Image 1 (tube, rainbow, N blue to C red):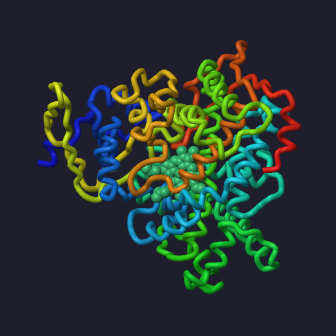
Image 2: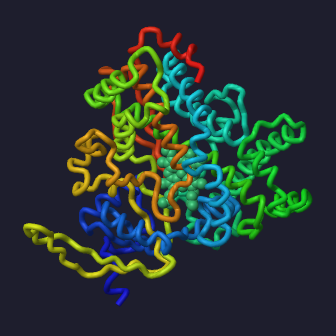
Length: 503
Ligand code: HEM
């Protein structure tokens, strides 16, 4: 029976999981195994906490897990029920993902190469002139690229700019609202009709965010009407507005009705808010860059190995670029390992089971000469309606796949020929049908910034201010807490080379 076959778990009703849920989940996985469950109010949460279980369940049953659980705080109130990340399975999701895919798939992602490269060189310049604020420079990079890509903003962007600060403020609010137990209204949805405390705060956040998206879109619309708009995601959507069959009045109406939580508007407005998400998630790149700096400063011997490869392939008289990527396997391996060691979204995003999912656990128990005898253990049932988290932290720290998972070993990702392994999966971008559609753009950003920074600088820990490599914010997307590093140029005429490079 379903009840007999529920995944084991800590028992009781865990209304609060406490801070850093992914760490708690990891501890529980050691006690209850790679698939465990817990009661959270009236809901059942199932946590997937090993690499093999992630493949068996999150990947192979991707279509049954394509849904999201109801998210009252972050989804319905904060996002007006329109944000792709939180939209449930169905036609609307398909449409949104199609639109995003058209602009982000791997072949299209390549066309943003020169934009990313130009901004990555600015990242190096900023590191050179102001190494102290290295984390801010990662944010500046991420914000500049997304503003240019989405709205074709080409004026220089600084992290301190108001529009970047506004975006960041919303990003942090949204990801904080997504944390399990952050708002009581997620446990007691009827509270959403009582505009007090957390609910009124969420409504205010929504209003501010919508105002921000609208003003950004309006400026793209204005440029379009003056025929001075550079092509961007916003102009693409504006130009294809007819495709969604909405007049300006309808648009205005939709904008007005947006404020009613749970309104079922379909069409242009959804894409407009998808665009908002587009900005939000890009900021994850900033966290990714911060983690790479932390890993480099605390693992000098690994940094040196990457630099030797860069020196051999690129030399010191020119900058590395995307064409070097196939030969810079150690750069890719370093990036992969940094985000295995410290995942950007360590708890993963919640999925919802649309059907019962049965997991047949097999364990190898009798190695024979030519084969391993696999014993079938008791089946586990993840019941329809359960909230399912692939806990990225546990999956990426699975000792069966990543021996000594707490140590930092980029070699995990390289085969004997020194090439990047294609038989090993990295789950920082999520799972199955909900896998991050921005993955290709993000990977290209992480590659080019890492290659340039490691080519340009030595990065050291400051002995007077040791880095706590466990100090991170507590949200769905984590950021390293501020830490000091010494960033010292290793290329003699760095500034001249940067300025001379016209790519
Ligand atoms: C290092 C950077 C990034 C990381 C680590 C990351 C990670 C993720 C993760 C874990 C998910 C949820 C997957 C799941 O539910 O299993 C996600 C969803 C999403 N990401 Fe990313 N992402 C990054 C960058 C980007 C970029 C650059 C974009 C767009 C330009 C983007 C767009 C999206 C969208 C639209 C979703 C929602 C998809 C859905 O729910 O169906 N992401 N991302």
